Image 1 (cartoon, rainbow over the protein chains, first blue to last red):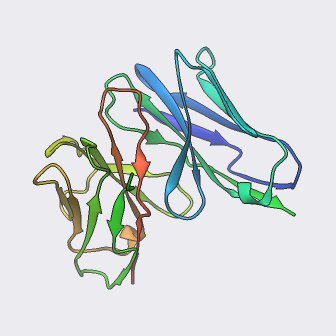
Image 2 (tube, helix red, strand yellow):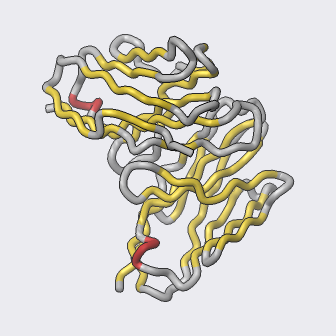
Image 3 (spheres, rainbow over the protein chains, first blue to last red):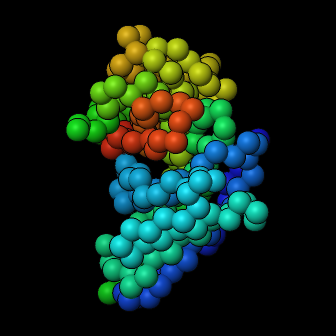
Length: 111
Length: 115
């Protein structure tokens, strides 16, 4: 059974700090790993990482996939209060059946 | 491009009652998912459709949950009868294809409270 683990489960930082969120996975025939940001109810897409695209960056956010270690990190630099959210990691397999989600990391950025 | 539409946004029912949720995916998206997200947990897949066919419903509690996507567009998810442990946010998501490298887009979800 596919499995996704995230750490830490909860994190509190101050504005301007840099944070690193971790995701590790066990999946048969890995295809892609996705990061989503969930502020209220709807998760919004951040990045997709695959074997052909193991590093992505957008503004203050960046993510790297380590296929050897079966893991990924999401970095947020110079955090802002608007970054407060739950960050979800999901993986899909080569059959594209569905996305298996981890429990999420709840990030709180204090002013 | 319009996003994934879900209704209602909130629903409170008593246990043993029935409830239905509706989802309209992004136009042209063949794949549709229903996820259940219990407070403090990640979304868990209930059912996946490809057009109007079921691809995966292995985690759907079929004794009380049912879902359909008759014309391959809109979908409804029903719970009958509801239990207290069904209290959760029900998220609908859609995706262009299935075996491709595209992301899923989520609706705003329906927060169900069973009392």
